[in-house]
Image 1 (spheres, rainbow, N blue to C red):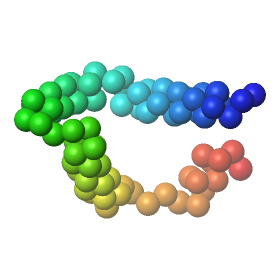
Image 2 (image 1 turned 135 degrees about the horizontal axis):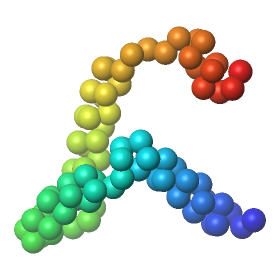
Image 3 (image 1 turned 60 degrees about the horizontal axis):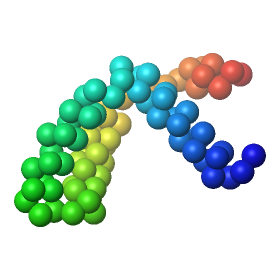
Length: 82
């Protein structure tokens, strides 16, 4: 199989899993619709907006990591089928 197709399929599989975990993409699309249009209207380009969203994402991820319960070795082994 060609590498581009493999990459696409891998990403699509990952995105499908993300949407399964969060219950679809409605919230994500709503969020993006609410912030992207006003920022575009104000003259920000896609790189500015992506940088802003990335910074916010890292902050949220750090918060989520800090609140996550540590997994036991048994849980990790079970997740990996061992």
